[in-house]
Structure formats: C-alpha cells, structure tokens
Image (cartoon, rainbow, N blue to C red; front, side):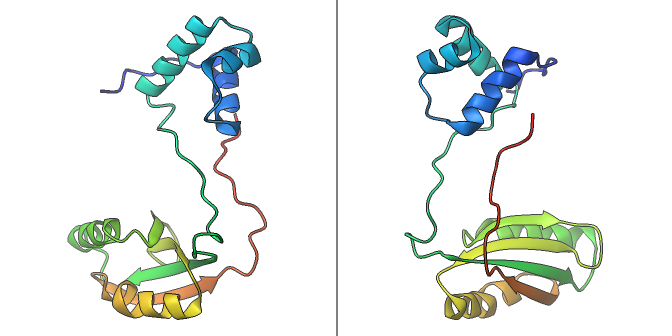
Length: 157
C-alpha cells in the first residue's frame, strides 16, 4: 500500500538525485552525500519507496552486448478508437517483452511503441508475427534509430 505522499524537502530531493545517479550506493555513502545520519537516510529512503516516489531499482543493461542493438519506434493507428479496442490492444502489448514501452498519445496516431531488435531482419519478423497481429491495428509507421543521441531515465528535480 502506498502512503499518502507528503511534500518533498531539499534533503528528499538530494536523496532522489543521488539514487538516480547510483541506485547501488550504500546507505552509508548516501548518508554522507546528503549530510544526514545513516539511520535518518534509511528512514527517508524507505518512506520515499512507500509513498511511491521510488518505483524500484534495476540494472541498466547494454543492448549492444545482448543482441538488441537496433532501436525502433513504431507509430500505431487503430481501426477504431473505442474502449474495448484500447483495452484489447493494451492487454496484448503487455505480453510481448520485445515491446519495451507503449504510450497512448494525442495527435495523428494512437500509440507510440519502443522496441529493441538484433537487426532489421528481426524487426521484420517481429512486425509480421507480433506487431501486425495486435488487436485493432490498422496502420503502422516504423522509425529505425540511426544514432542514440541521448538516452536517460533521470528526472530533473
């Protein structure tokens, strides 16, 4: 259960900034970085997790070393924009780990997907066996990324 969030103070924001830079930092080093006792920092960090400010911790993996070096964004337009079509599409997207992100957007199409593949042949196979089989898909537009100029998950605080 998530506690009702309270207003963040300067120390909370510093803790969040340090954790964004290094999620594996020890509690002792985090306490030194924000000039608090380890006990106080641990209590604040646990509260920030309970209140939903910190969603979790994970390792950032190198997609090139793991055979997923090609990033592809896909615009998806649905044939109908009704609640049941949206729900079916959202449920189908959840089961495909090749689809890393899916965002419903306002504008000229309905969803923007982010995928990672080994190469264009792998993307072509994915498009035929997964993408074009998703419920309600009328049209897609594919954008293969030529160069990742910036890739960050850090939020400005």
